[in-house]
Length: 292
Image (cartoon, rainbow, N blue to C red; front, side):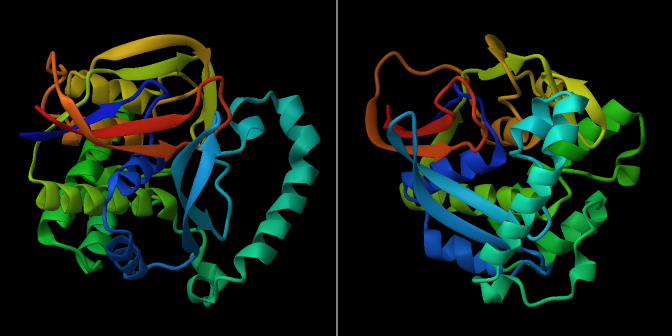
């Protein structure tokens, strides 16, 4: 019997999960085709191999025309004074990224008026998912992932689920991350006949992190809501920083079928998904296809 084991010692996020599943052997060409059918513009996708703490890992990178600061360490963890000092440098780097991204003509031939539709509700996200070319089983999985996040946002903000507007998760990079997770897992599940997914615990840091809602404590409220609802074991690390994102927590909640590794198993393949934030840890999610 084959199972998937997700080892979250350095946390878990959407891009880390997609990268780990790709590195494990999910069909890259099928994923890229699926992502090309998303009925929205303003992004491109790059899949590459990077080194994290000296080891190779797959980097699944959604490149936005307009930066959302998700991997900007000063924005995430810096003081207001540090943000002020780096503002001009960030603008310069952002302009440089635009110059670089223009090489990817297929993802950038559009009107810049499309950029700011980052606050989508669940119905709008589901409409996008319905228009994407993918297996129905992958589409159902993607909708479950978004529903988990919507439930958490509804609980945190005290609003009906149909009135919740996603911010970071409604942005194009999170939509692409969740579609990638769904397509890659569905592909591996079919080809490898995966019988279950083991996620023993989520490893999270401490401190605060800045987002569109302001400066929030770590774990952020959406993550604690998902952990509470789906009874995900949390292990708090001494390291400062956010290691578990709402998308990562949703992936664990939806995919997880059991929390304990068997006493003995054989590792058939290993995949490493790279995180983009600079932390004291390696910043990888390790996915193992095991036989029990």
